[in-house]
Length: 177
Length: 121
Image (cartoon, rainbow over all chains, first blue to last red):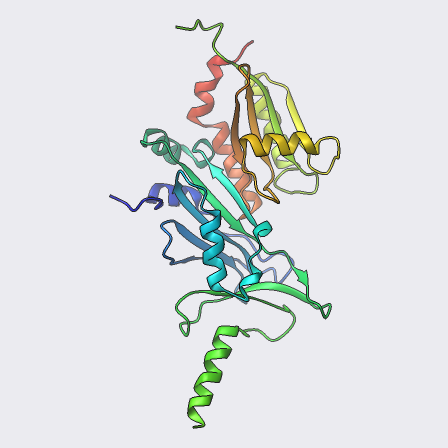
């Protein structure tokens, strides 16, 4: 018995999309990382080794459109939460025939009939108020239990995760007492 | 029981796309032509950057596809003789080769094998 909305292994394999390179940034290979969340489906984040995010994907096998739940979750993970805009969330339904024979047969046999709902979060490079280019970054450091998404100038210093910086400041504050 | 003649049959294949999108052109146009040829159907291209085609594109996506404020492309639809519209495929935002794999799987699918006998010669 699987949790409602969870993605069985056969569908997980069919949805997988390894490979690719970081477009218009460093050209290095993209790493796809699975992220844990309270939602039943699977999250993957495609990012380059510097942390520039290509796209984040959430997939759920069910009857409902998970876009709103995805938006809420991403807002909890993003600094500031306003980084997550509704227009950057794009939905896709996977029916089966486009997922290969194993997934197609699995979905055809499954009752009740359900599709795979995928929500993509892609933030295109944008300009900050000072005119500098901004891109979406992700930080997975253990200092914070969930991924942290933030925007930064890709030409600037790497690793300026606001959650990590906040924690460092807290620790410094404690040390100086 | 409806006779084979009165059963709905595929009438037209439609792709909603943009010329600048690498998932769309040439990949989905080429594969759309292939699928339309297998089904002996006309292929309709709706370009989201052509003012005259935008209302049609938006209507089919909102009514039958993956609709959202800035919806994904390409989206592929099969229109049936009874007025039904079947959403077949939405591009895979991850990368172009993944969308290419989806087209390959669709063209080799059990679904297509089941639809072929319903094609009018």
